Image (cartoon, rainbow, N blue to C red; front, side):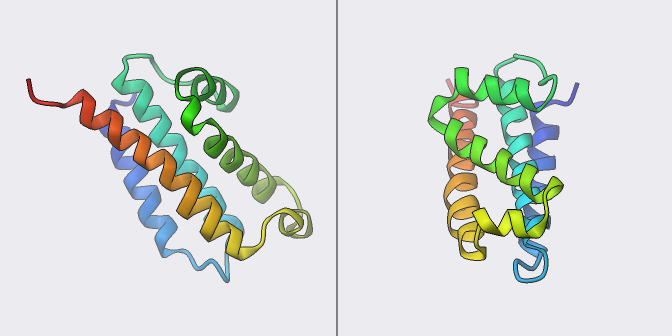
Length: 129
């Protein structure tokens, strides 16, 4: 089972990849990269709390809803957007998300909320005594 540090590194790698993708050329992959950044951030929270690894997307979503309701909406919207980006047509995806929404809402708001929440938990966990 990956450690919190392994999840941190994977989230950082995904975030770096996210920042390298052109929103104009690959809006669907931007959303997918944002979601998988969030996945590893949530798994990092679980590892920090000693609560094991998620069994899958639904288990992870339930965990967020129960243990971190402050970021539940952010995570849930990212998960749904990622599902649309991965499995639906571009027309269906863009009927719900414009390019501006991807940056302004999905990344700069929702992913940022999750990143901030995780950072706060990490600081509490490693607070010097």
